[in-house]
Length: 248
Image 1 (cartoon, rainbow, N blue to C red):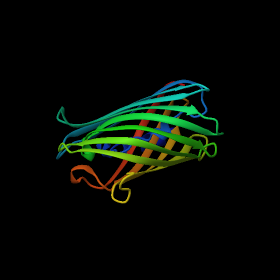
Image 2 (cartoon, rainbow, N blue to C red; image 1 turned 180 degrees about the vertical axis):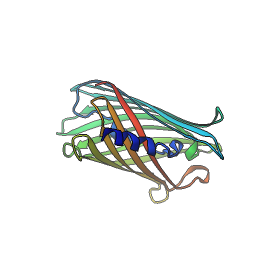
Image 3 (spheres, one colour; image 1 turned 60 degrees about the vertical axis):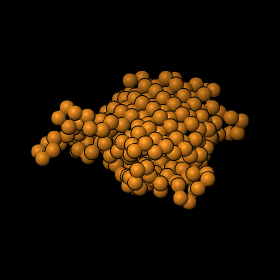
Image 4 (cartoon, rainbow, N blue to C red; image 1 turned 90 degrees about the vertical axis):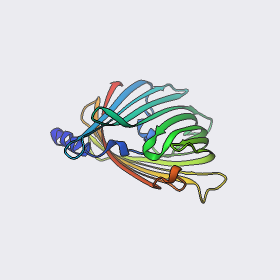
């Protein structure tokens, strides 16, 4: 059975990694766990014949949790190469602090983020935000925040927007090793929410092969009503990640 899951992961990795649009922060949290946790994920694909191309995705996440606070740091990089020449490169940095407040099961959150994604026509994108997160059940989470966003497109267009952010995340354990999770995000502009909003849906299937090793198959669908440089409004990806927990 384990060999089947590994084969399944290798099969799906043939899909283009560079199409990945979304980093699922919610799946990287270590809710309810105290201590320091370091994990890394990797995925790779290669094509040959009419076009020789290699793509890889490497991610590192660090959780530092105590009773009084939780910190999450995520670093992610993806490259698409042709004959040892880098065609495109994506990077992502995210830092988030979570602090309990007086209301039961509710936390205050602050976060900053920087990303470069030429696949979505972003030269760079910066976020700074503040909000709250509510634990509705053991697995169900709801969050809301306000953040300032600055985007610089590939063609040099600068755009600054104040946005609201709403998200819902849930997970289900299917058996001893498999679990299904899904997250939905909606991010409207505060000043023009009908003409400028972003939304995304992420669904993941995780297989815990061992205490430290996990195979995760993830599908994401993103929509941007006002994308930069006349890029496509819809973006989808299917990717398999091989995840290893160094410290847990």
